[in-house]
Image (tube, rainbow, N blue to C red):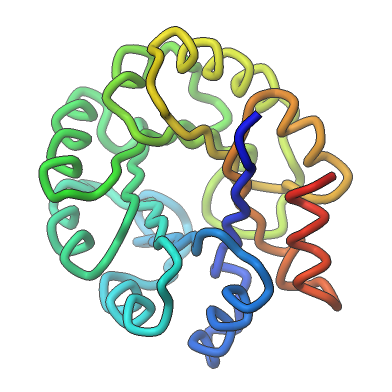
Length: 218
């Protein structure tokens, strides 16, 4: 089994000292920085935009995983890529009929592309585009706010997507986001996830290094 990556979500960080927070993650063993970009329309919250991605790129060498929870994400793909994103993931619920074209647009910028589904969206919605992806992201909470409880149907989705990925023969990462913690991370990994997004589980820990290592190794 390949090494699991831990991608702390800066949605749970202290925005007044974001530079320090990201450096802390890098020093404490994070593999990826997960950036939740929310527009207040697709989800009922507003976080940050392209400028934050650009500024984070200046202070970390870790990959920036930009999760676009916005309407019309295709309008922002090129700017996000130019700002320094390493991954750009977009929701089926925001793209639907043009998801394939948006993924191809992301790929054309030289950035890794990914499709995302919400807890109430079946895997069948994205089955045909999975071979085009570098990453597939399963939401195990409804997007918008951190600190929510893990939704159990994510386990079945992870297993189903892992089978599809295996059938492609390609190196496609399978990411999980929402409510992952020390108590459920072993089941999440057993179901097929190899990129673990964690917000509260890392940022609220007294020892971030220990929290990250526990998520990686449990």
